[in-house]
Image 1 (cartoon, one colour):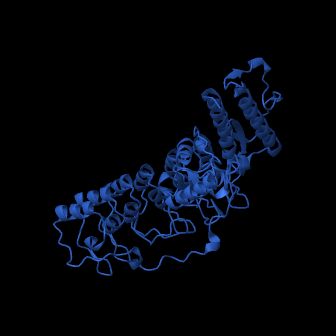
Image 2 (cartoon, rainbow, N blue to C red):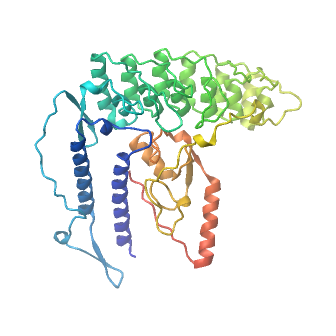
Length: 457
């Protein structure tokens, strides 16, 4: 196939992928709700969704430039007037009817009517419309209108969900949700309107714990200005199965330098020790986060503190750079026999029930023909070449998921759960497995299929 024809295939793939992602944003996620679920007129809502999807498909069909591939390898464009859209758009303009007693909020290309009298009501999972407007960046203005009306009616902004987001936790306030998804403007408005910064969910996490874990430093600063506590440990949970640690040490463990800086500016105790005796410096050294080590040393942290098992930071096996930094800045003398310490010395990890794992959910895109499902990107359906695995256990092409997070916010496109770039890890084992599969395929058939991916979200 010639270059022009190949480019045509790529264009069509890009357009199809764009439509797919648009549909993905309106798909239903388990235990997660959107403003559509609180629409005041369900019949009208269904018509609006159908109209929007037909318009998208018509636009997609009109965008394709059809070509004929000639025997000599050249291509001949098909005249524009001969083309027909993939789906004809027969939508008729309907007169807009304003429903009394409603406020209208924007959601995508739709105006969603929400009954003012329903703002204090929750569904079977304990969600109200404010919860539903707090986890997406495209509902910030909607959340603003809802918060304003709830304040007028003196309705609490701190109501908690009975289930979700996701199947592993509950008791999330709207502030919890906005912090976990990194929606800064909604966090700001909730705090300005009096939301509690220290409410806890079913796994014992407060809003600031959600922000610290994912490295949302601006949100951390907002919460600190509103009195969020930082003197209690962050408990382990199924999506963060670590040993409980204080907020500053947790940020160091994750390697979130800007978050560490924000916490230090907020006045946290840099030498505070967990029940196991570990400090923020212990975490930084063990996980080899050099910049966090340098920052803590520059703030005159105590380098001689020992864990309950008697280990100082230089007893850990770490990088030469980190040891040099500690020795030069702290004039620290290590013990004669430095032990190679494994993290298990802190004790056994919490025993999470495997039945509580995030349930398997259908991928956004099905695997391409000839590609095993386990080797396909769950966002594009294409064979993985640079695979990454998320904290939820989903596999994506690195470029595809990073592009999705950039354009659609901090949400997993498959589960709908909070997902930040720091919760995505390169999966070398999966890459090796795929390479071995490709090799066997090549030896068996003499060729492999390798289509160029387009990630334009």
